[in-house]
Length: 198
Length: 248
Image (cartoon, rainbow over all chains, first blue to last red; front, side):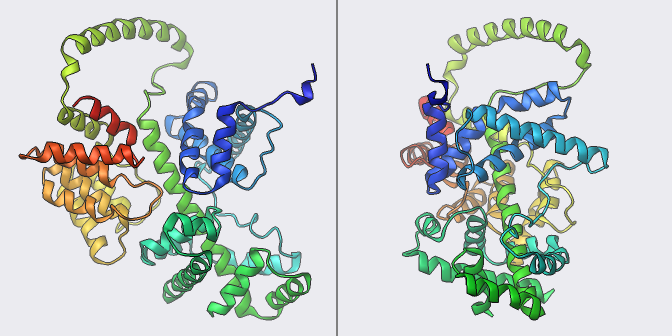
């Protein structure tokens, strides 16, 4: 028996991954199936790691959100089973949480880091941009995001969540991806005007 | 300025050639205003991502609440195994009693009772985010959770009137009015976001709940049609709708 050819993903796991990578209307259902499938990790975090119910939920949700990002961007290559891979993320996040707790940072919610977005930028420019981003008032910016209007807000959320303009056109019933791009940039401009007013 | 955003967008979508990339990065170093635009673009994307993740988390919380309870964490963990056996034995007895009740009496739970059960399980409290200011949506949710429904309405409506509201405000207002028994207002708010494209849109299902609670002549039939629409169109809360339709 050739172990290297042994399929590591079950049909169910493959379906979940396919629906998330499609990025269309089926992605949401795929995300929900992924969450439901391993929700027993929460119980494990409570008993094994002695976490509170809330922390265990946050830990698992953050794991799923991170996994969705990786699956959608094609980083998950199916070399191990979905469960094994997910559990490694879950465990790493638990270690992060422990570190944060020992440095008196109790929250395990996502921190607003843009390091991933800056990966492609050269070092010199990266430093300049990073310093400017650090000055952002995140609270105000998120408040302004509500004020741009529901349609703009939804479009920006989908864009930030990794949906392409073509995907957004399908989901929000726009005629073409070019129309979405124009609208999305207008929404960004509107958000900027609102944010800069403060 | 929109041109700058288009240029920045093209860079981050990796649509520029090597020479254009070099010039773009040089511009960041030479032009502080442009660098500021780039920083804003990234901050906006990150902020939107955080918001999208938060929405996802709220959706996950709802999914979890629809599952059997995952945990019971009070008490001493060291003795929990013994307790698990005791609780399991007690649970087995309770399950038997419940099954007997279900088959002989409980199976007749009406759709209206199921609507009430759903409300009890899902609308008792609204999940509140931390670290927000006093005039926020979160404050409205806190007031709701404290049973101060009138104050919660005032809070949500002031956000709605300021124009800062989104579908969530309408959803929360619908829920508060539903709890207060003001079904007309609840319907009005739930209907207001029915056609919005959202990550999670329970509008049609919530309208059905409201009609079942109001229970005026014709409401039950209308609620049934709405629940069937949820199932047929694969809308959010499909599973709950299916359960209710089975009771018809």
